[in-house]
Image 1 (cartoon, helix red, strand yellow):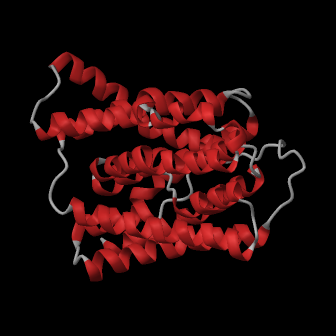
Image 2 (tube, helix red, strand yellow):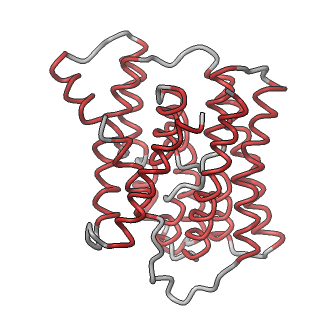
Image 3 (cartoon, one colour):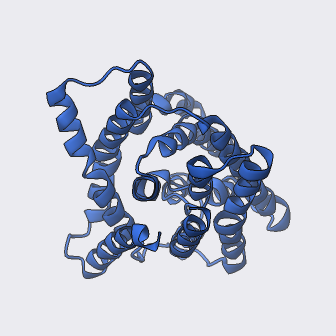
Length: 306
């Protein structure tokens, strides 16, 4: 099983090395990230879901993952509120840091390498894009209510403006109806989708290179450590307990749920924090630490469950 993760960590290391050497230029992480999000990832999801429709015990696995996400994200939110006495916007980012997984840049490569398809991670992306993202942005808007009025229209249309969301919906509908894309179009989509995994991993490595733009924000090591503990260890453990003991899952469904829960914090946590003038250093530290730890936790989880 270790062999399945070697290409993942190797390509991430390539991205990190490229970022450290600046061989791709200062805008590489942004340009490649946009290519993955707006072009390659939607193509990969559309290709996967039309060829391999979602079915079987996926519903129970999604339930186990979703419950674990809400519980752990809620724990992070409550800790920021009552233990660390942070304002509402920072509470929201803390909850997101603890529960919102990197389903795109790392989730898709992991699912493809370990289980052979990205069907389950597509459902996770649907949930995060259509439910969690509007909820998080809505709470951040409430925290900055003086400018919230003009944002609600954009907030309500977030899912419809997401290429990942649209690709997932189209793939689910076409797959359920057993409708395949015309051959030439399908081949083009498949070829473009093949770029998603290596591009996403290189983009992930690029994003891990430290930047000198923290604007004097103070480090918060205790809060970061707690968030990483909740995200990287307790979320997959809780998901395993729910999936195995409550829902009785075994095999690929169990593996998919636990591996998704073991994914590190999504880069969108930092993006949202900066967009709403919230402490970006905390979000970035959690992302980097949880991503580094996931190299061990994902490998161990897959080895024990398969």
